[in-house]
Length: 181
Image 1 (cartoon, rainbow, N blue to C red):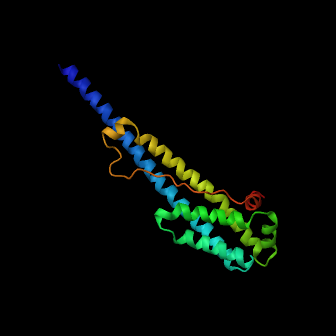
Image 2: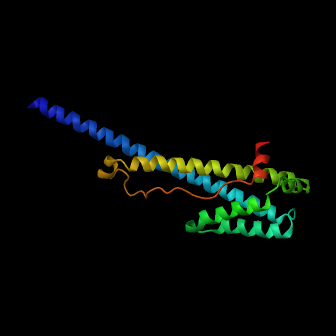
Image 3: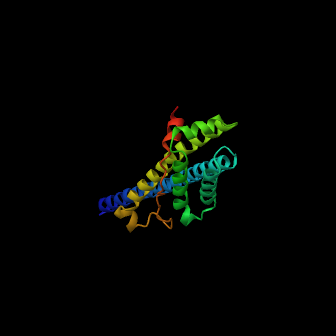
């Protein structure tokens, strides 16, 4: 009788330890998602700010400046529900303006254009990396939250189900080449 109670206590302790470890892991994944989302937001804001600065610098032709400024402004001012669409539209505007390497070279030749082109190239290169890191964290948390024990014992608590950030983040080829060099 005593040995049976001891084995039951050991079993319950092992189950409790496993559940505690799983809850801690899930909490760390949620913290990682929050940190990755903050980094992604910072990179998106940096890209929009650099694009807006370039649009107002007078380096681009007036039509390209207006398109780029409006897309960057919309991306900076977008509500959370419209953020993915606005950021995708900024990516499309950047690709439309910088379709050829000649446009990047024209920006570089203008006074202050070398720094602006370099900063924009870095910004458009960092956004896909930040988004990938965020979405990988979301994917890991979702996989853990789908486990039966996590659902049955409600180990996620009241944390919202993590959502991936889906957007068009393909950089313009001319800027991507510039970032690589």
